[in-house]
Length: 295
Length: 212
Image (cartoon, rainbow over the protein chains, first blue to last red):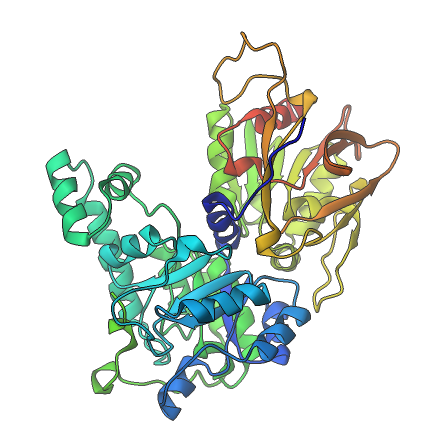
């Protein structure tokens, strides 16, 4: 009897995200940083040429990274490697798939390539993670095939306030669907432009059908633990680690904070003497808000 | 019966839900005192580098090893299986995974490749019997296959003669059991696939029998 082997199914795609739960995914720009991230206990790395704070500082169009650099990182570490494509840029996604990255982040941190459509993620073998500000964005991305969701936050600022806002928005909107009748579910599905079945799932299970991480502006162990206490499954830290004065120490501290997010004694210990955090930005003074990109 | 699920990282909740479905009481194990009253422990799938590192920061590693020596049952899935094996191969990255060394098996990390090489396939596991998820399959005389989910999975390259092979896919061993320490019967269970991502509780029921 020949047994059917299934590959790249939704279960396998969201399954990898389930294996990352309780972990920290770190932005890295070269093999050396990737090694430091792995040593610090990252569960995966995000390979990109410029971290969000540099993209903000330097301006210009931010695109997919050089495949050479992504390949070097893939060779260097044994943990999963993710990489970013511009919103809607399906050819960048095809290239990353050809490289064999483990996850693609269709990210608002890069300059959007399509203002109307996101990538049709269900067509790809590689799983996708996408950002959201609210439940509607989360469900639209899942409906397009995203196998993992993260908050958008406001990347590159070192300010957690937007990530907090987005986590609360998703949570509150999910709670508001509790015990919803058919009419409310149909209305919400129409408002959010997603199938009724997705809204029904959220109403019944009181959670998203995929893993949900926090991202955008996290800079300290306390930021990471706060997101975990608010119910996130794990965290992404972008500029927060390698733009700080002691990346390895800070990375380790954030990893430990995510593990013991409910233990204030541990949090106090790991927060001690971390040196300077990344240079932060006041969001009200920014002219370009990444979180507004793609909805 | 109280069963612990190692709560460092990975598919922790998924294992806890399966155990509860099987009628076990579950405690999440994050620190040494959580181990006190458990009869068995599951080490979930996740990233073995990270789990290994965290096991060695708060004294959990030594405390768990002591419990296994005294006969406690332990089940490792995927990353968890790596942590139990005598020898870990393909471990040439920056991080060395420290193994409990409680089952005579050689296991290679990420041996099938990257995420796009992950796969699902039905495997025959006669030891698990034919009941699935509490639903009676009594009319079906044949043993029902187990839907095995392999995600960036390791490969069990070889096992010692005292290790019992429970399932194979092609020529690869994907599930096995052995004995360590003062246990009266087999107390170490490993699988390279993820039963916690299915609705089939048979693997967890099997482990509970081991722990009882």
